Amino acid sequence: MSLTRRTLLAASAGAAFTSTASCANERARALYITPDGQGDGSSWDNAANIDAIDDLIGAVQAGGEILVAADRGPYAITHAFEISNGGGRTAPIRIRGVSSATSEPMHAQLQGVRGEDETDVFRLRRGANNLLFSHLAFAGIGNGCVRVSAPLANLSVEDCTAEDIYRFFENSGPDDADATITGFSIRRCTATRVQRGFLRIRYGSRNGLVEDCRAVGVTNDSGHIPAGCALDDRAQDITYRRCIMENFQQQNGTEYWNGDGFSDEEGNRNIRYEACEARASTDGGFDCKSRDVVLENCVAEDNKRNFRIWSARATLTNCTSRAPNFRGAAFNENGSPCHIWIGRDRARVALANVSIEGDDQTPILEVEGDDVRVVLSGSHPPLTANWGDLDDTEIVFPAQQ
Figure 1 (cartoon, one colour):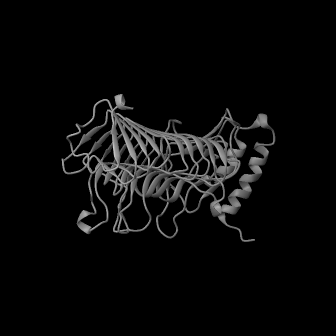
Figure 2: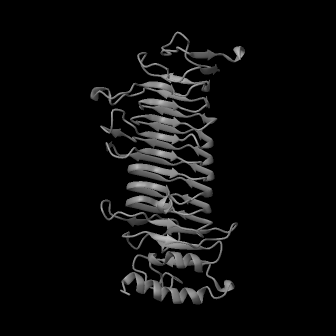
Figure 3: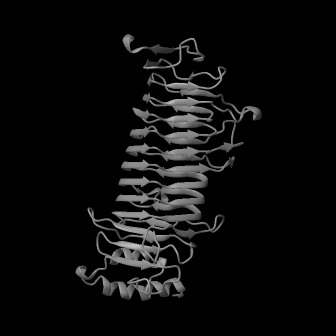
């Protein structure tokens, strides 16, 4: 067996943690991490290394904290930290950045390197339930500042930032094994220079809230399709609230340029977007395929197709579509701009108090499905406006239903 600094630290820390955890009543309320820590984590003077974070979570009492010093310098991230311990169902364990001088919240810097050696950071495995991460600042990270790689429950990520990353939150098991998340929230997190997306939620993940988050993508020249927030598989019962996704663009990728602000798939259900905004995507601002998707008070602007609706049923209430932008027009892209695109046969789309802003050349609707029914209520553009080619599309007012 070859011994590395990491192996030695884990071995020496493990003995201390065995002693610390020998009796549940003796478990600490808080344990401590610094960039140069080599102790058992019992105090700032005897702080542990971040490599020992899983053992620390296993040693702290339910409802306790792992305090990560934010004023002692950055943490060099060269590998993922695999976590298999967690808290109690009603007493989660919190991992948070703080000032070691005052214990006040402060963003701890976790610095990786993009490229061949890039890595995710916190890789959550089976058993990592009931955890809350907050006040962490990630930079130069690969596929997941937080990555869920096995089934778990009750996960929160709050008040974090990220810069120059592939993806902020990833939900993907090894060899695509199940990694369903039951109960999760992501709040007040921001990310810039995002290559692929802010988050991806998959499998049967459910009961989720993404609130007050914002991400800005970098233009992807061909390559993978970017999406600010992406749902896949059978993810369900998820609400986005006051989230903003900007600049998720794929240029020169194919004959059709992709790149969405928000996307959900046909297997998803009970998906809600509340007061969210999508801007500057090369495809859909909101690209929705889930049945009965609901969008309320949302704004889509500067995307090729601001609202792209594939759903069998969809409701848009108090939404605004502003100035669609067909970036691929000068490059002979096979596409077209519009405010609201409908692509499913027999789709039923309800538009209530929808506001349309922009030039008169861009159609309000582009319908590629057959036997489509659009129900208008409240305020809306007059029927003399440019509604596009409505062959095989029925426009209905509530009194006509």
